[in-house]
Image (tube, rainbow, N blue to C red; front, side):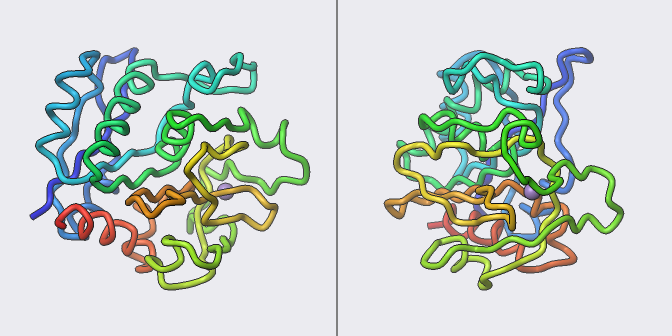
Length: 233
Ligand code: MN
């Protein structure tokens, strides 16, 4: 059974790791074993921990430090987690070296894009004109807006549809894609909410939270099935 490395959130006030159990359920529902790798400050140990795993799941959380993509932090940028900003790029580079699959969700999409040289809007409402309301944190049904999955993408193939309903719990989004990545999903206002490797490497990222809706909307479970299946190869 493939073992999937899961990155936790880190609360510096209480010095605790936190992982939403939806991520754990989604990995187990898809047939994998979740293994949480703490954001330790030692790159060698991080790489050694990842080497015992077969795939990488980058979870949501606080904003990525704009310094990671060469920008000043604006007042509209949210809380940062320096521990994750250090650990996750180490894990991403190692996963890519080994060719094991990466599924990046929300912050996971942003840190992967930043690690490979992309940038992002520090706040959509302030920096992207005519944006939909993307920070929707308290909608009971969790359905926020539709998503168009772009033609000839791995994402569309994996989800088996060209459109789906998604939740939206983000106030940031990709501005410039990193070299080697291409857009795979677009919100009705034009924002990029999905990206993948342009050269066929096993990298899928989405801005929404499939882990929260995969038991109700099975096309979202397919993302985790893809991760576990690729990890088993
Ligand atoms: Mn959105």
